[in-house]
Image (cartoon, rainbow, N blue to C red; front, side, top):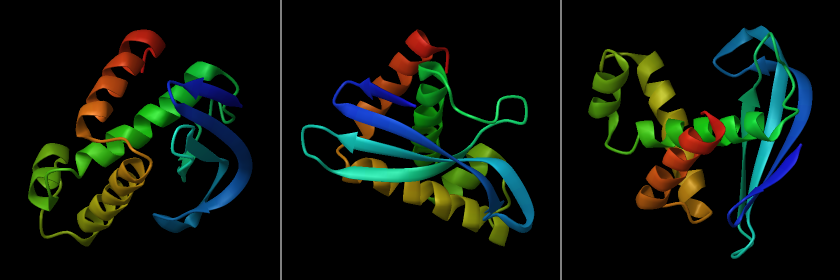
Length: 135
């Protein structure tokens, strides 16, 4: 599945079965690699996305926009540091699981910034995706 959102070309490749990094005993058959390319700067990034059990494969533009929205939302969760992340998401600050989740979100934030998506742009994109794609 491919689509264009403003200056971003977004592509999803269905990979199928893969072990989930958060639990190496749990296999998930709904794995995708989503790639985002800034067509103005030619910078690109990619992230993994898992589809639902009911709809494992991304087949529509709305589903691809939802994956993009989730990527941005994860990044935003880490923007203000670990303590705020824990407070906002109900984690104990003395938790390795919380820290691992925070670092994964922080990685998403850095990936978004690398392709030119700053804090203001993230907010605008997320609002637009909510209004126009039901994210």
